[in-house]
Length: 340
Image (tube, rainbow, N blue to C red; front, side, top):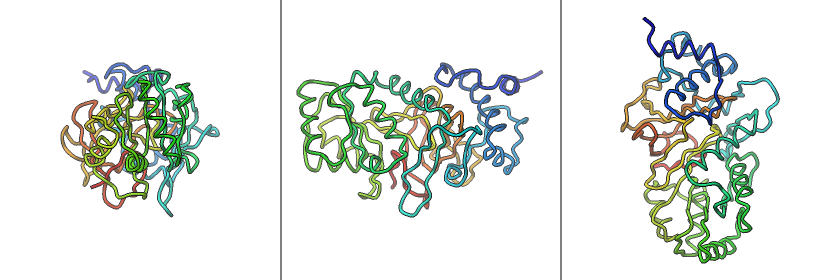
């Protein structure tokens, strides 16, 4: 008698990647597509295949998605993590810190990234055309290769509102526009890096009822890092809002998770979070236990869909998690990473 997980594994090997990630609707869809992605990348991604061989993982023994190895995220700094041989269409790079290596994410098809973030945005919010989109992302605008800037620029263009746009250091103009949009009762999203949002509310106070404030985390060396509760308390007070929304993403992912308050994030259907033991990278933890975050991102079809991050977090349910910080001795970079 053949058990169901073995059937899924056999099916995945026979019929690789026959569903687009954005078409995933159910848990069974996710599991089948995950198994297909594993076999595709095990075959076509030499870095991932070498890592699996190094830890003595035999793909024929795979019975469940919970047994799939997660590639340590640092490999994006030291290797070309690609599941294709052609020239990449675009390369995203991390911000890094002074003197540190940066991660590189080689993107074969830009349309997959656009499909991922646009579909997720529509899922958690509305279509961009329903908002004015204001981006306060100075540290990202000051360099090239940011996937967050690419996403924000796309949303701004799709918004098509005359006041939508990027703001670098012109906080006075941003204050006037926020007050004007609030007066017009225009639904607005203010997407900002944490230190810049704090800079704004230190200069000006607001009482916003029609603006969603969404932080991407990170002080980028401009300010002392804060735990989420302290950061959100300050932002709520300064902007006059009851909740602060958050976006969780990173250079190595083509998908984002969103929090609409209380620091609890939800993933789109093609993305899932697990926790692993901080002292044993091959032990998966139960719900409610704090550990390092492992991420399956099926939008990463052409790189690696299985990433072991350096973030600390806790899973509350299949589609609910929180980010608690970052492991010691790892560089502070990326989005929404607050440390104790």
